[in-house]
Length: 367
Ligand SMILES: Cc1ncc(COP(=O)(O)O)c(C=O)c1O
Image (tube, rainbow, N blue to C red; front, side, top):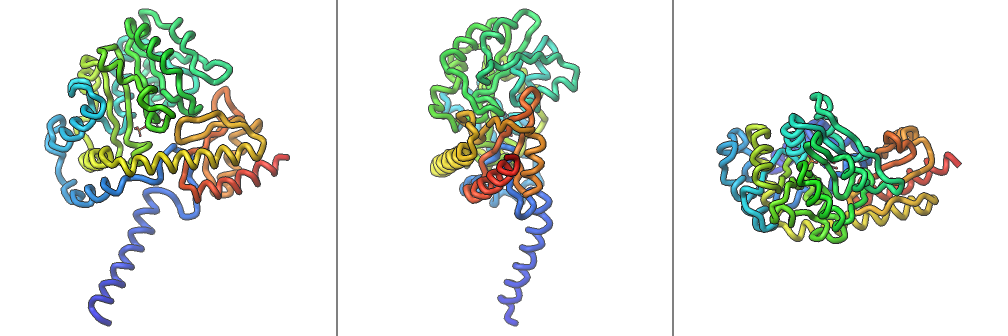
């Protein structure tokens, strides 16, 4: 056997060791369709992957210093330029979740946290576990966040209000004008967090974003993430835009060191407009497919402006989700006060074709 052939074979053997052990350990067992965590399976961007490959061996080192590293600097500059805000308005965190947790930690010491009953809640649960008082305000009957009811509850005992726009798991955006007015008024009494994890997937991202309030020095913190449109959920990078005082306080409560590999990938995917447009197109295509699957079964999903679809199937959703999982398709379902709702995250289109077949079969089995 020639040396090159032998090396080729060895390479193949090594690759299969890597794929069986490493990839299998990391993520999805073969044959499983995972539509659970609102990830973007088209990511990370090719430019991000190429950059990460070059620097992977340098992960023996911390990325310079906690607050002063060239890659962090470049990423902050790119964010500052894109949103037309100053550097003192910005922070970078390990996933947006870290910024949310830190904000709840800082402001939860001073008073109550107000949030809708049905919303993204990892950071809210973290705060509750630390003994912080989290007050939940029910959604309206049309599943919209009830801004009036929330406003009515804001008094001197409330230090922070959390809203996700669009909301998770409903996928519904808030009315942008109503939200702007809410932030300006409520901001006089409490910090308002607007979690814009899915902003890039809305119909009109610029209008939907409350970043203009940051430019106007309002009492807000906006969080964004590289986990969704940028397809980097596993690399844990997010960022915050807000009033300089809020940014300084939240920055102080973040972990000591950012993730250097993640920062590098974030910086390069942020510039990759082709990849961003491609991701958006595929996700919207997927959303139309899932909507079609549900509608053909007679289920009317909530109109989503995110990478997931929320729907009332009129059945015990926890049981339904288990039936789907038995057929190797994982979705979410069964929420407190909403036990008949399911949530389907966008996978690749081929995965959504499998979803179509499995959902239809399981749904029909209840007929
Ligand atoms: C509304 C919302 N905010 C934040 C997050 C957390 O994202 P990250 O990966 O940036 O921590 C999620 C994740 O699903 C989410 O749905």
